[in-house]
Length: 288
Image: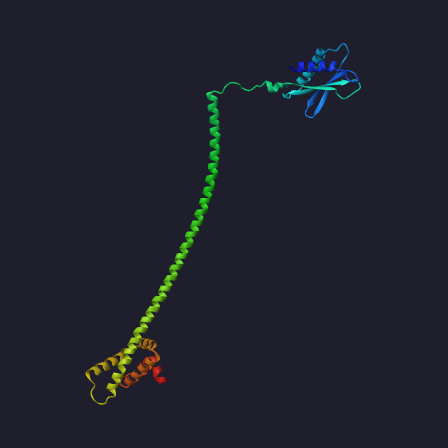
């Protein structure tokens, strides 16, 4: 059923109904928008002259004009209300909907309706590729610059670390050289002291035999004692001041005293003036 037929059927039914205050005196046309409505026009009813067909046609024409003036493109809702004389409360209502009319801008478009050609698609893809390459090159330049900066900083740090390692190596070698020199010097001193102590011990051990041969009387000593005596005399006679000083420095106090006793025993036979004697022996004689 069309909207006009719906209107005609509603109007015909309202015209034949007789209410307590009389029949319908007018029909009002409204445009409904959400929860609000707008009265568009009032259509009076003339008794005996107004027919449902004519009134429905007039109402439908007004509704069409209003619909055409609205270019929202959405369906438009309209309402028709029947009133009796002296009352503003409708005694009947009917709603109908008219399809919306699209605007000229939405109906007529000036877009290119020609299908895309191979040349156009190829050109578009080439432009896309060009833009993509530009973006990739830009990112590559940024990344390369950052990597070069990091590489430069890393090389500089590595150079500093190598220089520091070389300094540490040189300091370590110097420390080791000094330690080795001290150890070598100490070992030489120890060996020298041991050698001097051995010499002093030998002299001390030989002293009793020599003394016994000297103080034994006028008898001739044995061949062995004579050889030992001559060896000790030659040793005491050939020692220089440096050697005597080294021997005394290496001997303990008792051994030093024993060596002095040995020297005193032979001093009467060793022909030396006081100036030719070593200072340490002269000092020992003065102390004695």
